[in-house]
Length: 163
Length: 163
Image (tube, rainbow over all chains, first blue to last red):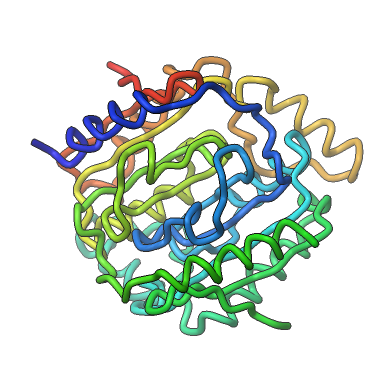
């Protein structure tokens, strides 16, 4: 049995105890951008209840055009006004460089990705980079709060990154 | 008090009951790509435990270059071999068109986004589109399983999209 099949069985239990549909717009007007890391259960880390906040995730929790797209939709169509950025300790993005990763792909496939891998050597500096990319975007402008954090995978604690 | 501050207080409780660090690579070798919708608590929907699966999320759960980047890192550096795609009923992406969304931004800011908004009129067809984009990528090739689902926000159930 694949892991996917096991998760589908879990979903049957979830559906049995599921209570009705909630409204579409996030009730707490929050959008989170976090790393895809398997250890980050964002709903539990923040105590988010279903329906409260958009959760956007990718490798690193970095801000690229696709996060700008998601945040623009989140703010302009669904009314979010706070952004929470979450990177974390022991992140895979600290363990390689764009050049090496892209070269290994090119050696195997003959093709070099046209996108940046977005690896970074410093967690706090990359949180600041993500904040700056949002501040520089003409399309994500509706927030009253924009704050960045590093989640510590050893303690479960969010530590704020200051400017 | 902002929602962000409330969530930081929740995180103090989370950290108090947190048990130690888990390994970096996803233990079940799974990567999930899901919509950012606030009602999708992906860990609960699939019964994911911490450390088991990468979770990638954006507006719509669509596959753009940034999801290809995240999936390539997930598979090539962290060994995932199954992909689960999740769209959902009552999705915001069904409620607008790229043209209208981009025109409204242009009217307000003077700038037209250079990216597609990725709105779609048909859920199942967009899940198939996401599957095809992965199948067409030369960089995401290590999976043994690639399956797409529509999560029903009224029942909590995942319904598989067939080809």
